[in-house]
Image 1 (cartoon, helix red, strand yellow):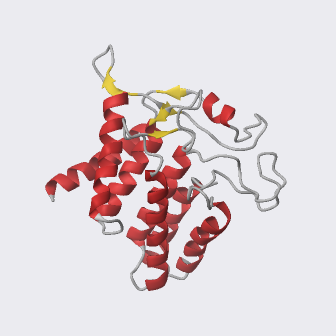
Image 2 (image 1 turned 180 degrees about the horizontal axis):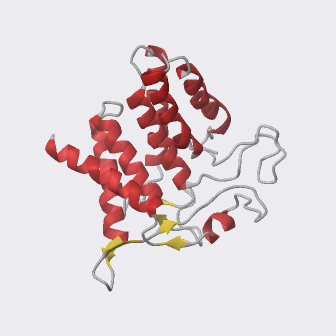
Image 3 (image 1 turned 30 degrees about the vertical axis):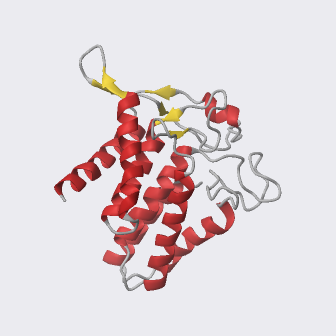
Length: 238
């Protein structure tokens, strides 16, 4: 799964550079290159949510092994995975460091093409703007904002990309951050969860992604928004 890159690679890279003499760093790098090889869509530059090498899972394309659609939060975690892994890499890995950096910029450029012009947010299924059931989703938009703003701060992305990150952050706040009846902040528009496979037949279709619950104050939305806000504050200090 594309979003699984965040759950492993930044932590793997930090362990290898800090504790293990960098022995596994090339393995971590190869994980990203395999994703680029197998899961990147040549037409849009976006990455599919899942990939099955066996081509046997019911959600997998029998020819490519990829799932059918581009899920926003998976793309968001993937961008963050690249930024956070780069932050932990040693510059001794000259070629690999720059290859992941180029991969990051390419993926951000692909996302920018689908950024909603009015709100600055992104759609639950990234390339299906305006399709019935699709919606502007909070967690993935916040992850994009965090990845881009941090990428600019650390020199992985051009400074002009700040505008795209800020637009996603402030657009998400304007649309989905408010005050509830109890006077506490409420963050809405968060997809509770989405996956592939299992007994519930999560088939990766548009209908599936649109059917998952939309909730408030879930950590998968609040956390990324707070991370993006830390980058807004860091930019203000600079």
